[in-house]
Length: 219
Ligand code: SF4
Image (cartoon, rainbow, N blue to C red; front, side, top):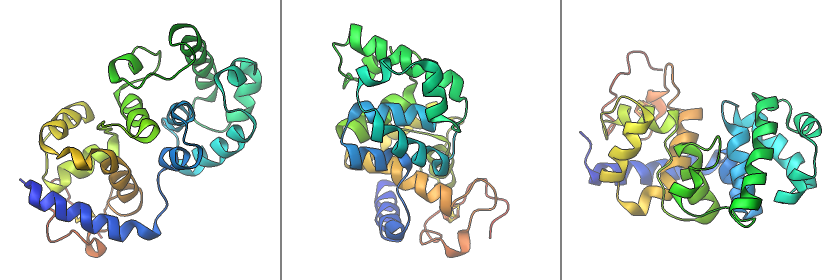
């Protein structure tokens, strides 16, 4: 198993290698708009949708609507059109309205900066809640999506069966100074190099450290 000295080296090398690669869409929204609310909306839009689709939709949408009331004043049917072609756009338009209503009436118009409270919002799971904390508030959280789960296991840093287990394994093992950046690093790495099928190990700067668990085919 990879120890914390080795994961520190992995993170250092990935940060250098990633300088020329774009951040994930939610990270970009966080940096550009500095709004936990818009990070939350972009997280919802990004679920089961590629970043190349999510980002242009967010840019266009947030140019016109930036507030809870702005979304509530936009009819669901209109919102559907605005967020098309993100995946499940009809369900997401309805869900965004429900969440905005909840934020306005239960949370005084503010996105809570607490994991347990975020999880009480309909349609908000651990991945979204953790990402709102890290990218929206700059607070500690461990957001594990399919890329983070897959790469953490390939590296040999954790040995887990699903993203839920990975989150709790990382919470125990990963030093807190890496919690905020770990998600964006591994998501970008997973989209570009350590792909689900046939990762590009021959050009990977951590291929001498990585234990390459469950990697049968690589390039
Ligand atoms: S060496 Fe291969 S499996 Fe390991 S992190 Fe790099 S691309 Fe992924």
